[in-house]
Image (cartoon, rainbow, N blue to C red):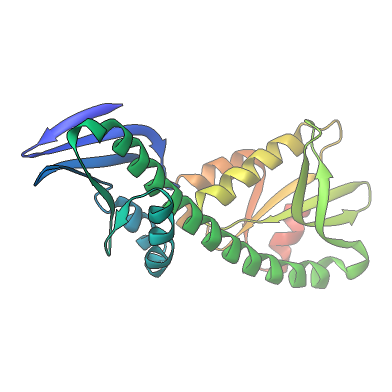
Length: 228
């Protein structure tokens, strides 16, 4: 944990991360009869970056109420006496992270579902319905069971296709699943299907280390090569 001062404000950075990887930082300001501890609007900016800022107005008040905190249009905060500072820092940081996590998760699930629906149609058209299994469950080397968007059964091998949104939770889950499946004695071919490789930024390399990565709009021959 680190602390820095800027004018009358103090900023405390905690070992917690938002879905983007940004560390959670709370801002402490003097107010009449005490201190204000806020997330300085960072959770709002996190969800704004994925176009989900309207969700902040719905989710933030619910989470704030559960934690006995307050919200305004862009921030979650608590006005407290100085002796409650430590507890308020923890509560505000945890609530801010939870808001971003929940909104990211819902957006990610929605995007994954859209990619997956299109992916199923493409795979049936390319490989045929008789070779295709939707929402297949496979056990990895750890014996953990993973639900993948689709499996295509080809002569002497299986090809796993997984729809991946551009959000960190989706990338991390797919990367973990692919590494686990890739550690099997006879691993399947692993293919991540995304909307836009470039938009993934640094997260692309994480997927590429675990399996092949293609875009859902690419031609049929790209799907065939990925499955080869």
